[in-house]
Image (cartoon, rainbow, N blue to C red; front, top):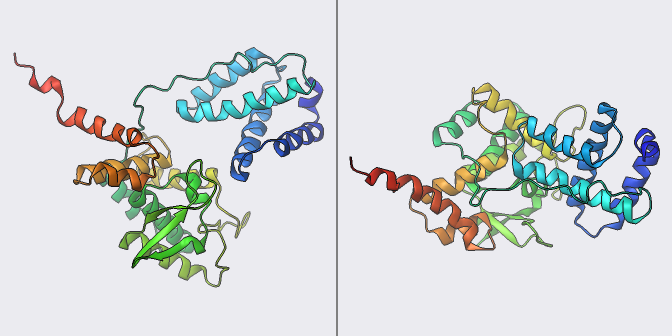
Length: 301
């Protein structure tokens, strides 16, 4: 296996053969490729032979970087599947990922959401004079006002913006869906910010990605997960909110908790978040109820 690690061309060929053999969505295939490549780059930099211990060390290295348990498990899933493929095809004699344990996700786990003040700070920090600023302003508005997932942002094209019974909506490729049959309602503010950004981008193809890179390195290319993360990190750093976990889900959680706190029915929130099971949405209700009606406040001494 050491030969595969040191010979990039051989490793890349094996990775590509593996990716072509799995029946997953193209975007999932892309995530697996990034996760596997990132892992082997780390292995080479650590100058360590591939083994079960190195996978455990890798898991600890991801934890040391401050990644959430959900993110780390996502990284490890791609690696475990690839190790199984290598073993089944006789490329390695022992499967080092067979007994690798995933991190435990606490029941009811929710990442801390942004507050209204923090979202306003981030929006106010964006310079909307440039096309990049217009893009970033529209991006944050969509995340905060519509509760979109990163994967949904990445998969959205301009022609996914439709009019439905007089309302502007954005059709998205929902989680574990084969088609773009889910949608979010674009609020006046979210839709206006998109219009300003797209107007600055003209001319464009109607089937082009909704958000693109405007950097010289990848101008016109679709924004990646890392690209979106870098954009958010920039404004979180500018506003001094560096203690907050860097995740688009912070905005998604904000959209959920904000709508509930302002009196929205939980079923309507479920539809906004596109949760298949109401119990997923009820987690937000339970957390809010736990804080607002804490039993501790009823203790009398």
